[in-house]
Structure formats: structure tokens, C-alpha cells
Amino acid sequence: MELYDLIILGGGAAGLSAAQYGARANLKTLVIEEMAHGGQALLIDKLENYPGLPEPVDGYAWSETMRAQAEGFGASFMSSTVSAVRKEGDLFVIETGDGQLSAKAVIAATGAKHRHLGAKGEEELAGRGVSYCATCDGPFFKGKRMIVVGGGDAACDEAMFLSKLADKVIMVHRKDRFRAQKAVAARVLSNPRIEVRFETVVEEIKGEKSVAAAALRNLKSGEVGDEPASAVFVFVGSIPQTGSLPAELKKDDSGSILTDDRMETSIAGLFAAGDVRSTPFRQVITAVSDGAVAAHCAAQYIDGIEGKAYL
Image 1 (cartoon, rainbow, N blue to C red):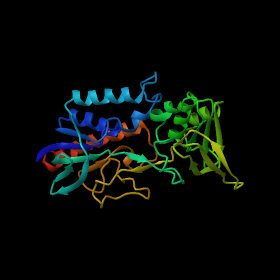
Image 2 (spheres, rainbow, N blue to C red):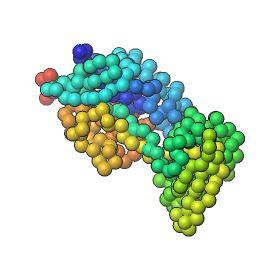
Image 3 (cartoon, rainbow, N blue to C red):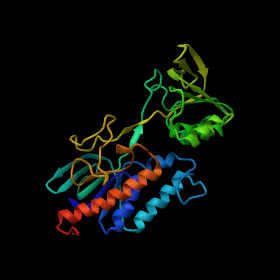
Image 4 (tube, helix red, strand yellow):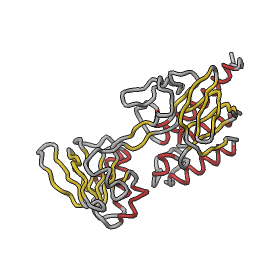
């Protein structure tokens, strides 16, 4: 069973940042990612608010640069699925689809998956007009009427992207105002191609072989009506991916992992970074920051258990 100093679970913004800082600290570092490295950043059409990058870059290109930097410092990458993580003495054992690995410290940067609406027809029409990624699927519906559900940064960003592809985007949000950053929300509200309907929910998504309409209910009047559309894009939050982690980890009410300001969890040597962590603000820059702090503190933790702590 190969031993690493640091194993990072997940190759999104937090994991890639942690890989760079872990490798620069001269730790034998491995990133395990079951999908494509980049995580949620891959869905960003234009990353425009990252400090130091005055010109917008697409999420894929940014992620490629992050991985190249981490590899340049000596981090390794592995494509596999992690099924379980447990602590045995001072070491962690990581069960993967390609066998067991061990590490002195682990950073969980497993992210979060899109939350579903739970509306009738949503599951049946998933992939046939119901989508959770505008940049992935939006081009398939170019020139057609689309509905976006949600009121956060992701929903607003994706609605803006879709407005470039269609003359009319209907944006539905259950509250009376957006929870997105003010600058992001203002762009949506001033976009003539986006029609915003506050205090409205999706009751049902209709269609035979593909999406044809959505039944929308106004929460104030109770009125329900069908809105023709070829696609429904859902952005109503996320579910932290903690299934492979120890069950005894302390979490908040949403299932996100609780950490201290060093990104350390309730299990010594196990750190968490990015969207899987309980945090008031989820952005690429905060995920990158989390990863850097987690790797730095993981290095200090390893020094401690090896009796090399700087006193």
C-alpha cells in the first residue's frame, strides 16, 4: 500500500490549490479525482472576478493552468473513485477503485452536487431538456425559449449566458429578491432578454420525449399556468459530497463539513476545503484560499506527528 504525505480528494479549485501548496511544501502529494479536474470551475463561461485576471477567462482554461502549476511543483494526479476513508493510528487509509492508499494527512475537497427541484417530471426529463449546466447544454437550445430556476450567483450567471443564445429566458425564483451578489443580480435585472418572475415556483415539468413546458405557480396569488419552454435549467443549491468520508465527522444542518480556521475537521489530520466545507460564501477564490490554508496546515500537522514541529 503506497504511502503519501498528503492525499487530496477532489480536483476542483480547492483541490488544485491544495495540490500546489502541498507540493511546494515538499510533501509527496496525490490528487484523486473521479471526473475531470476543475470541478465547478469547468462550468464557468467567463471567470471575470478573480483578482489579478482583468480579462475574463473560461473555467476550463483556468483549471488547466492550475493543474499544470501543481504538476510543475511535483503533485501527482490519479483518476479513480474513492469509496471510503478511515483513520488507523496516525495514518489514513483511502479505499479507491484501484486499490488502497495511505496518507499522513487528507484534504477533502470533494465539492457538492447540484440539488434537484423535486418537481414532477424533473427526473423523467433529465437530459432531455432538464439540465443543471447551462454552459454544457445551453447551445443545444439556441434560439429556443428557456427557463432558469434559482436566485443565487450560479443561477444569475447561467441566465446571463443563456440570454446570449435565446431572445427570451424566463427566470423563476421563489423569493421576492435575488440572493446573488448585487452586481450579478443587477446585470440580470437590466437584461432585456431575461424576464424575472419572483415568488414563483415550478410545480411540474411537462413533455413527452423532451421538455415542452413548465407549470409555474405564483406563491402570492396561487395561480398556476403553463409556460412553454424547450429547456429548464435548475440552480437551487448543492449537496455536499461526504459519502466516502468518516460518518463521525461533524457537519452543519446542510451536511457541510465543519472546520476550524485551519480547515481542520473534527478528526485530526483530516482537512476540508471548498464547497464541501461549511462556509458563508462559495466562490472560486474562497475555494482556492481554503485549499492553500488546508495544505499549509496539513504540512504543519505532519511535522507535528513526526516530531518536527517548529517550536
